[in-house]
Image (cartoon, rainbow, N blue to C red):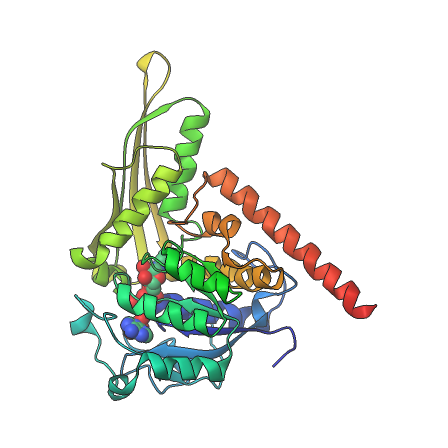
Length: 370
Ligand SMILES: NC(=O)c1ccc[n+]([C@@H]2O[C@H](COP(=O)([O-])OP(=O)(O)OC[C@H]3O[C@@H](n4cnc5c(N)ncnc54)[C@H](O)[C@@H]3O)[C@@H](O)[C@H]2O)c1
């Protein structure tokens, strides 16, 4: 393992994990600036410096396999853009808890080892793997499972990236635990890189910059991966709806009545996600401005591009002595940050964080050579 490695543990080896593992493999194979990777370096690290040291799942077709195979297995909808070489990391059984409640219970059969997994076995596995950062990619609605993995990561002194809308950065007790253990916490609910929320909030900012009042708007999303299957169950999608509305409120509108969320599982779309967005505004002397858009993206790579920022930011923040919730990073990379900001302010703060990380890394390099 290179001395510049960022040791990463994955929790949930589904579609987002697949695209992220593929993106790391590609950066190793072809280092250099890449489409969709905003920063070739963050804190002195390339994306290819990510080293997977552990992975947890419950699915019988993933547990026990090398991570390089598990990322294409089972119901994973992510498109195979890159062949991932053998990684030498066996997917381990994690504690199930509420991980597969709802529609997923019929779609995924659990591995026999899951019955033996517990918070204690998880803690032992993390102590053995010594990750710098744990990335949580569990199904939305797995409140108990997300909190269990978050607590275990904090106890192990690892940073945590919570891609789910379940509260971790927004849970004061968990946030305090990460601060106490000297680890960085990023969350909650990963944004997509160029997805519906980012497009929606950027357009609201555009309307407002021209003093065009946003009177009505909606953002309807459909997709065909297991995330959308899971979200088709109302008991599982509640936190996602709340999170999306929170992102719109941070953009500066009253979002309490706005329809914004997952609106259906359409199997044939696979990993494609389609968003129908409409904004109705009112300009000078009450003149109407109506905008209607259709955005189609591949869902999981859209998350991987944000993870490429988040993992390196979490690692670099801790190196700089920034612990607990890292506000200037969360506002740009997550839909439901503890402290929100408008799109342009969030981008400004994130870029300033990346510059500061580069300066810190350069100072450390000078100190090391002195
Ligand atoms: N663009 C995006 O795809 C995007 C954007 C923002 C947030 N997210 C969020 O990221 C999360 C992951 O999305 P995904 O598309 O990869 O989901 P997915 O359904 O493809 O993967 C989830 C994985 O978690 C595993 N799992 C379930 N319970 C578990 C447990 N207790 N322990 C370990 N593993 C368990 C499942 O077997 C599955 O492999 C979701 O919460 C989603 O809402 C995704």
